[in-house]
Image 1 (cartoon, one colour):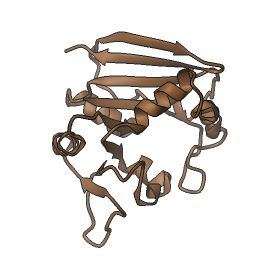
Image 2 (spheres, rainbow, N blue to C red; image 1 turned 90 degrees about the horizontal axis):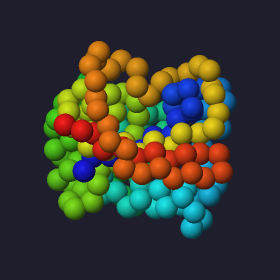
Image 3 (cartoon, rainbow, N blue to C red; image 1 turned 90 degrees about the vertical axis):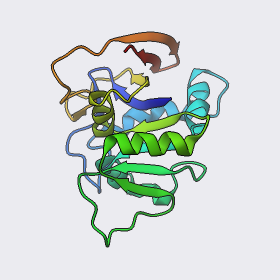
Image 4 (tube, rainbow, N blue to C red; image 1 turned 120 degrees about the horizontal axis):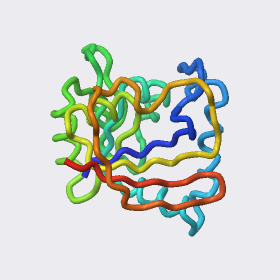
Length: 186
């Protein structure tokens, strides 16, 4: 399955304002990741973190990839990374297990094949929107943090004006985050 794993503020932002390579989460955006302090716990945040890290491949958008410092070529455990981009410069060779892909369906197919029987992790608003538009995203694991950022980049902007039905399959509450898991209904 292809599963979006994203942390967002209660008002829907995944980064604060003025995000850049120098300030990848924008002003105040790193507040969204305070819940990761509990990632080694036996509690809800530890559970969802372990699930995310057990994925077998990654699809991310180019902006997310670049702002994350290209994850120094390894997002987690050396899994193959398929980076959605509008164009590929032949002299720009991605590091480690990363591959640039310009077609969303090709990225999904290659990631699923690489992941085998494990899930494919998705990161980034652009990648999530592209996969949703193409009908290729199966599930969403949203980590909704108890904060209002007020500005920044929203996760679900730029979607078509049509319904995408979701079925909630889990809700886990931790100190300052609610982990919501949804299945995309087709």
